Image 1 (cartoon, rainbow over the protein chains, first blue to last red):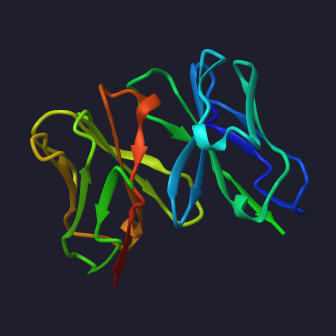
Image 2 (cartoon, rainbow over the protein chains, first blue to last red; image 1 turned 135 degrees about the vertical axis):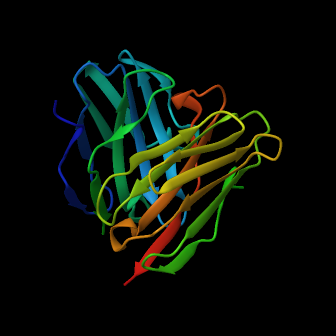
Length: 113
Length: 112
């Protein structure tokens, strides 16, 4: 089985641009998570979907971050407009159940100039 | 304030030595703990999980949990250069992934 696939691996954006990150979860997994990872804050939850329904929208990230899951095998994270402080690694993870292991993708490294 | 605190921030151990990593939650409602390992430039991968008081051993890795103090520790014996990575501790209530909180991690370097 394929793992979690994230594209692109690297993204460079100008301040104010809109960027869309993509994620394909492990086939059959019902839970999908978007995290942001920085050295200062560590891993922060952005969004959580269960069976395509948005369960958690990450509170503080609501205003410029929007995650969608149009079908069970594909999710997007849109950041609009981007700011330099958004520079980070964005990780997508999936799980087969609420108490099960998270499987992470390789991440997208975003640099906002 | 970070709800999951890990110490030390970084650790250097000689090859063949013992590495001990600590993690404490300030949320008294958590009762499930995971350890994830993230090699440089790679994604985190689950290493071990523990839900009951006591100890769990898998090969060179041993995890302890004290639920009363909400403290877990990870011990790596006979450390290898390939163990060099960022070790992330995560905690949740009732084992729910939706309420998983990660610590900032301990960076382990094993020197040969």
